[in-house]
Amino acid sequence: MTFIIQSLDGHERMSVDQLFKRPIAEKVQATIPERPVSEKDHPVDEEKSRHHAHSAASAYEVVEHLPKTTTVLFAEQIMTAPVIALHHQSRVSNALEIFQARKFRHLPVVTDDNRLAGIISDHDLMRYLGGFTRDYHRQIPHKTNESIDQIIQPRVLAASPDTDVRYIARLFVERHVGAMPIVLDGELTGIVTRNDILSAVMRHFVLELWA
Image (cartoon, rainbow, N blue to C red; front, side, top):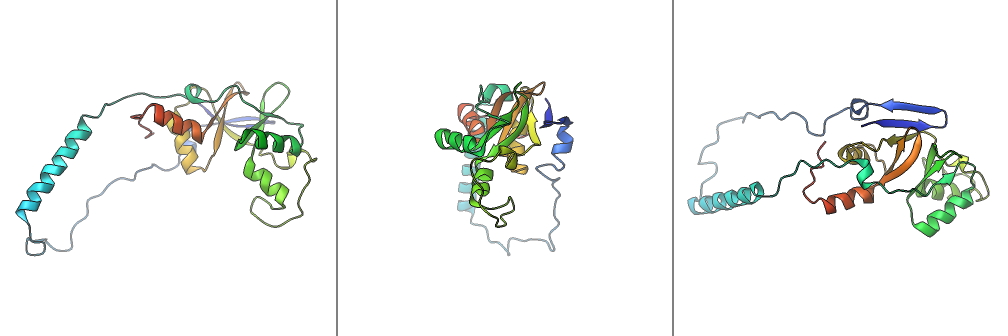
């Protein structure tokens, strides 16, 4: 399992510890009440108490009998392949045509030898054409005949085909990533999107997405 920061200048391997600097769940600690709690504070209705206890026990019994799985899905099992990508010498108009025709949210950018050179999102494209910077400062609107170099994100977080899907899902949430290219030896082999993750959860309903 490998995560990579890919660019035209080369690549940089990223460990899981580097990507996830904090755990999802912090250590749980018990709290001490300020004063003892007695039945006078909270009168007990014994009939309701027995009913709630029975309901809770029934709920736990149902949960215990749910099918358990140790299934681990890898990126290559859910990724979209082959990938529709832009050539790194394309124009903004080329990107716009693909976004309009395919309803994509992200487009990888590749070189002549299919090496990942960057990525473009539909938001980046709309901001550029609408005359806004990435931090939404107003500027002069641009034209579609300009090079995609103006909107490409040249350093892309990518993953290898054997990457655990759970870690990709966490990155989507924690790093606000919308799509992750899958590369092998620097070449683009697929892409995993939020829709791919949701489809995997639907197909493997009891898939444990905790990583």
